[in-house]
Image (cartoon, rainbow, N blue to C red; front, side, top):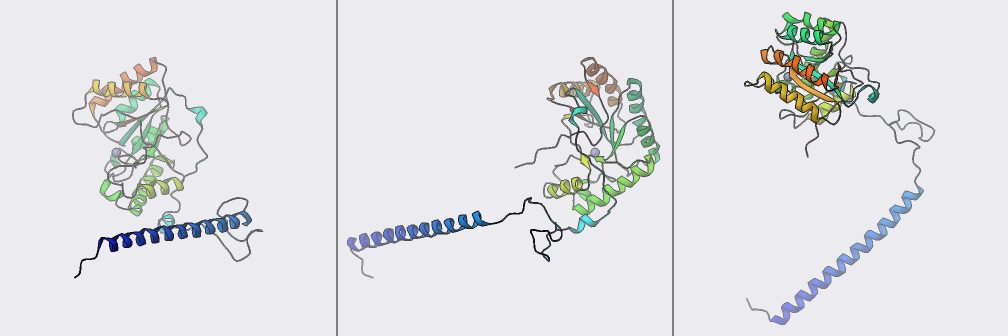
Length: 300
Ligand SMILES: [Zn+2]
């Protein structure tokens, strides 16, 4: 093949550059024209007064055009699995409010915790399971009778099952709901997701799970203070320090994660925790669904 002269390549480059400039200029002009025409259309378009989902024809929409929120199949499951939510009431919660919460009960240790709370005159919240502690179900009734709140924490507490898909989650929590309702006579309206609302088991589908729980009117509570009582090497003093220091660091109300799992160290720590914080002006309350919850931040 004959080698072309330098002049040829120079001309070729000039032609390519020229064509590129011409084409991009033409494209920009076309976009500008299109933009102007769209702006004009926007100016003359009539919008509905309120951008809400409308079912059926309205004065502004011709008959026959129906806009409906799409219903997803899992939203049809367990239609009575829902709660009434009337909004959050910030007036009832001061910055020095502490919500003690106990997960995973009832257990052989529930009675000890309830005795301490009763002696101190303090309300708390229990997020209970249903799986293996049916023999202790009468403790749920005692919780309610003594002014505590009973919330859901799933029936099975099996992460790999309940976070597998949203149908499993609803099935498991519905069983938990019915269990609590049957034992206490009161339908629960709050819950805590095992592992929190965002955990390594539901990273793929926590958005739809959280949305569906909220759509049904339930409020879920994550936490902003962790007692660390569930770890194998937890000590009484360690638990006291975790809770007291954690509560002092909170800017607003404290939501303290603890576990009702029959560990002596928690029983020993609970009294001193309540005494220390009470002296510092903190007030302990049981949760209800008017309390605005702390929620874990969505990961990027
Ligand atoms: Zn748990």
